[in-house]
Structure formats: C-alpha cells, structure tokens
Amino acid sequence: MESGRKKIEWVSNFMPLLNYLKKEYKGVFNGTKIGMAIHLEAKTAYLAITLKELGADVFVTGCNPLSTQDDVAAALSEYGITVHAKRTHDEKIYFNNLNKVLDHEPELILDDGADLSVILHTERTELLKNVKGISEETTTGVRRLLNLQEKGLLKVPVIAVNNAKMKHFFDNRYGTGQSTWDSIMRNTNTLIAGKNVVVAGYGWCGRGIAMRAKGLGANVIVTEVDPIKAIEALMDGFNVMKMSEAAKIADIVVTSTGVKDVVKYEDILNMKNGVILANAGHFNVEIPIEKIEKNAEKTFEARENVKGYIINGKKIFVIGEGRLVNLAAGDGHPIEIMDLSFALQTLSLIYIHKNYKNLENKVYQYPEELDEKVATLKLKSLGIEIDKLSEEQKEYLKGY
Image (cartoon, rainbow, N blue to C red):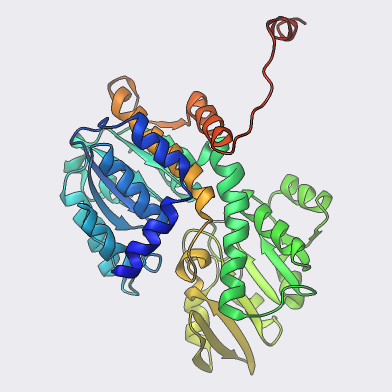
C-alpha cells in the first residue's frame, strides 16, 4: 500500500494539466456518481483522485485482467474512492468487478475498451436510465460503441476521446511507442539493434512502435491490410510484407491492430527459434495463445512476465500472456502523455455533465474547442508561446 501511495505521489509531480483542471473546475460534479473502467495504475489513480476532488463520487475497476497494480488499487481506496479491482488471471473475477461498479448506478461512465459500456447495454439495461453519457478512451472501445450505434442499441451519448487530436496523435503514437519498448526491453533484457522487428498494423499505435524500433536500430517490417497505410509505412522507410513471410525472419513480433488472429498459428510454426511475441492491442486476441498453449510440447516460465513454449522443437516466448504488453508487463504510457489524455477525459465528462440533455444517443467526435484547450494548456505548462493570426491574415484566409 505504501508503494502504491508513493507511485501516485510521483505521478502527481508530472501532471500539470490535471492539477490545473482541479482548480479551474472545483466542485463541478457536486456528488455525481462516476464509474470508471481503466488500466488501474498510478496515473489512472490520479485521474480518479482528480474527479473526486472535482466533487464526484468515484467507483473504479480495471479494464483488463492483468493491468491492475494491486498496491496502487489498495492505496487509492485511502483517498475515499471505492475500488473494485484486482490483478487476476480469472476473467470471472474481472467481469464481476465490472458489475460491482455498475451496482453503484453511475451517472457518468469513463471507459477504456468499452467492456463496462457493453455490459451496461446488454446485461444491465435497467441502469441505463441513470446514465448521462460515456467517455471512451481507446480505439477498440470507440469501434465497439459505434457497432452498438449501428445496431440501434446505443442508449446514451458517447464522446470518442480516442478521436481527439491531442489523444491519438500523442497517446497512441508516442505513448504506445515508448511504453511498448520499455516493457519488451525490461522483461527480456535483449538487444533491439540489428533485430528483425515485425510490427503488425500501421495505425497510430503501429506508427509509434515502428518509429521507436527504428530509433533503437532495428530492421523494421510492417504488415498491413490497408493499402494506403502500407504505402505510408513504405515511404516512412519500413519494409512491408505479408505476415506469412515476415514471420519467417522475425526476431520480435509486436501486434497493434485490435483484430483477432493477426498472427496465425501457421505463422507461429514458421517462426525462428527464440522469437519473442508481444501484443500492444487492447485485447488478447491478436496472438493465438489458446492454440499455442494447446499444441506446445512444453510450457515454462522463462522470466517474470515471459512465458516460454516449445513447439516443434523450437522455443517461442510470449510477454504478458499476449495481453496489452505495456500494462500487463509494464507501467503503461509515460506520465506526461497520460496527463494529456486524462485532461481530455476530464473535460469530456464535464461536457457531458453540462450538456447531456441536448445530446443524442450517438458517438460524438471530440469537441474541437476542448481539444484546442488541452493543447493550449500543455504549451502554457511548458512555457511555450506561439504566433497568432492577425486580423489581416484572417481576412486573407477568407478569400478565394
């Protein structure tokens, strides 16, 4: 518990935007119940504390079975926040904790991956009448909520925080890029320079992972299904090929697509002895873990957070059980990156709280004025000033 408190205190030193918002919007929630499903570690804990200091009653659980840090969860409860979270391999415990948060009948929901929101809309529909809206953090969650909308099942307004420029330009690219390699390196202690690194997916997360691998001296290969993104990767200086071919020469494979079976079991059989597999997508479906477990001749713990398998006489290493590698086996994104994302989340919840009566039951793009506010606050916190258009320049831009 003491270690958890120290982690929370440490991140508070590097989150100037949340510290600013605590002062600007003090008391804005005034007893409003907020349910949170997040990767529960120090930075998210500080977000929960911020919402508490803004007047909310906060109820927190994890959004991935292995991404909760138990010492942080224990420390967070000392701040007057109700915590239903535990690092666990048991998905029943994980889903039970999600339901415990819903038992508190939250009025606002802050979600990451949309498990909490999907349960609300499919299993706990009687609670929908209490909910003003949802703020969703990540690509996978926004996609799932859009699916609910397309099927006519979405019953509350949603703000797609992931789609904010200040989120996916920085969190998905620089945050995922740095934290993925931080986790891989600390858990394997292997050299990256000179290795063949295969990055599956060239969305914003894949861009960041590939960029950082290149900076570490790796030979980067990108696999894609989108021809435009494939050409972009090529022109960014990376090799592009099919996974079936890339798998044969890979030393490290990192998936970041949000799609099931990006690496097929047949690809596993063709991989080199000693290959390392890691997933940076939200769910543990990109690497075929069940088939690997089922067909392995031997399974062993290679290192903490690294499981080894012998298949056809070759060793295959998987970090964090194929779950989100930077959180299942690391500390997640850098603090300053999450300060940006959580400022967006906080402003999103305030926006819903104030405007929900005028919002439709659909997924909204992030309000541009709030996006720009976060950018402006970030520059101010860094002591950076930028130019402004003169009135003459504004008039010129209105011309043909």
